[in-house]
Image (cartoon, rainbow, N blue to C red; front, side, top):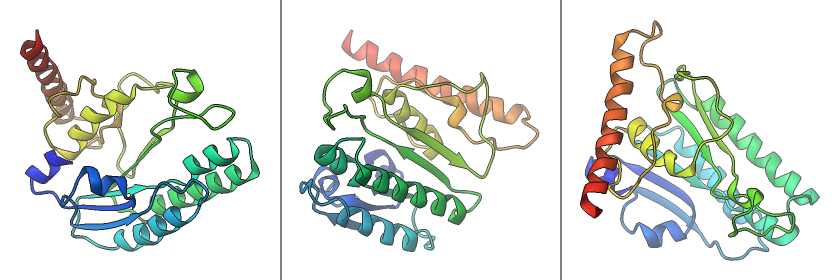
Length: 217
C-alpha cells in the first residue's frame, strides 16, 4: 500500500474496517464495515459488492481493494460443509463473474484467499486444509505461460508479483519469488520486449532479496 502511495497511485478500499486501522489516511475513498461479528454473514459482503460495482464505473483509481468476510464468518459459525457456505460461495462466484464481465482490457482481477479452514471452520494451524487457499488471476489480455500451469504457488510470492504488475518496488522485507505466469503479455506476438520485461522484473526481485540478505547477514 505504502509503495503505491509513494508512487502517487490512487487506492479505493471497501470491506473489513481493520484495513483502515492498519493503513490510516491511505485511501482516496474508503467504505469500511465492522468485521468482528462472526454471526453476521452478509453486511460486509453486501456493502463491498454495492460499492465495488459502482467504483468499477469510475476512472480515477489505480487499485480497488474489496475484502469480503462472509465466507470466513460462515466457516467460523457453521464450518465449510454447511448450506450457508454454499450460499456464500455462490455469491462470491457471482461477484467474480460480474467483475470479469465489467472490467476493461487494461484492468486485472486478482482474487486471493488469505487462509483455508478445517472441517470445523478453524484456522491458524499448519494443516494442509488451513494453509491452502484460493488464488485466481484474470485479465482480458493474455498472461504469460512460461512453464505451464502450476498447481499451487506460495503466498509470499504474491507480493513481488503484485509489485511487478502494479509497477512499484517490492517491499524490502519480502522474500517471495515472482510468479511470471501472472504477468500480462504486452505484445500478442510475444516479441523480445516481453522477455526483456520479464527478465527485468526477475532481476529486480533477485536484487531485492540479495539486498535483504546483505542487510541481515
